[in-house]
Image 1 (cartoon, protein in one colour):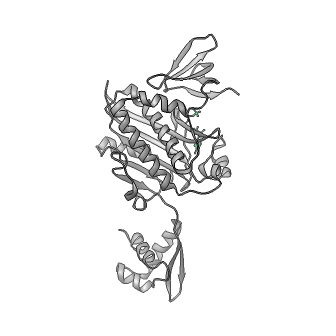
Image 2 (cartoon, rainbow, N blue to C red):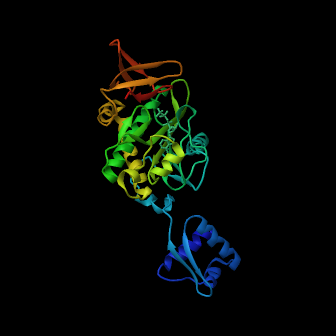
Image 3 (cartoon, rainbow, N blue to C red):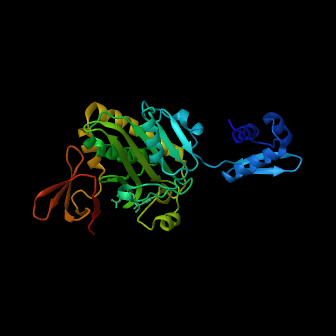
Length: 327
Ligand code: ATP
């Protein structure tokens, strides 16, 4: 424990009253000035601490943080979340997770942050994650898979998010091929899978998930200028993010185990049940071409099937295309 954590522990033990500065100094064996600096730093972290001359310090309110000490013991999983790395700020959880994977880490390790400064989306896009408002985390996987199967993990993660939202707040979210989750027609979650592979064997997959939880509509409009929503906007109330996080990790754990036992086939049905735009006119945009047609669903491997206007069915693999509905 560092000094800030030790001070917090002392304040929490005395939540109904004040803890004197002298007592904290004795316990930590540091100067009054050092205590004051730590208190200021805790305030900067979002803790509300009252300070009274000659009386001491009192903890009035704690920020809702994703620090694993607050939630780790409640997690019930076999693989996902065996270990956790937590950051107040980082560049991109996918980048940190890739470094860990390269060095050789435990499968299922979760890298989580309150704020990302270089959040990534597909195709060089960015993912915005306002401090302490959403969930931004990545999971390292070492699946027995070939590289062609990796997009399936994105779809599996999208289903895990849909199930977790349903389980925790009883809202019906939908998956949008290949990597997003929508709620009431607006984007609430983006997923980015990155991998390193040899010719026919995956070395590791990093699965990054960004979910909007406590952002207000104004915050979303200002940051994204996009058709985005959050659980708070949809529910009209703030949520404890760690509850949603635990649910996603547990759902992902179950689905990942199922994938290893049975492959992608059981997911085809589960995914299509909550998919956006099946049976509707959509546009698929690639680097050099656009296609229009009716979305038929996905094939046994998760590729997108579109019935083009000439009646032929075209298969799209997730790499370089984006899907839109034609209004
Ligand atoms: P598309 O929906 O166009 O296919 P994509 O799935 O390729 O996009 P992602 O990689 O999932 O895109 O996410 C990046 C895009 O998502 C950004 O270009 C931006 O438009 C949007 N975005 C970024 N941050 C958020 C957020 N917090 N909530 C909702 N949308 C966001």
